Image (tube, helix red, strand yellow):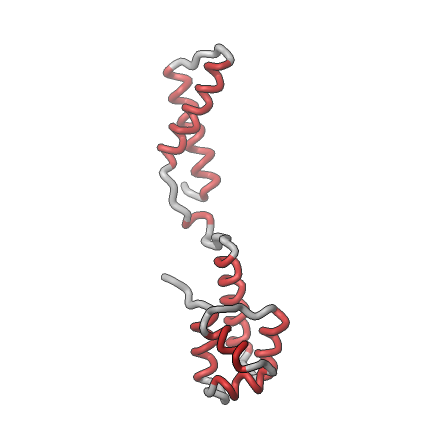
Length: 139
């Protein structure tokens, strides 16, 4: 389920506030109307200080303030390319990754004139899978 963006939440909160008009809301927040429109249109994200100014100037509830802070931080992270999903929710083909890691390892060992037996290969792949599953939060 996709979380609403900052601009979507800001619009929803403004429409339910004492100042449903964008220009009035911007004025009470102490912002230029164009800048506020950019926030609602998703073109810009407010700084932390500006967000606090919006929250205080328009008398938002504590729940609304917490929500806006969260979605602003999430949007900022997304725009920066940071994945905020919990580690366990990241899906990976662990057996395939383990095989690929083992092949890379064997390639380097072969360069050092070390041969890996089929049994050692199977054990290494199983251990690599265990490490990957642990790192990804899988059981």
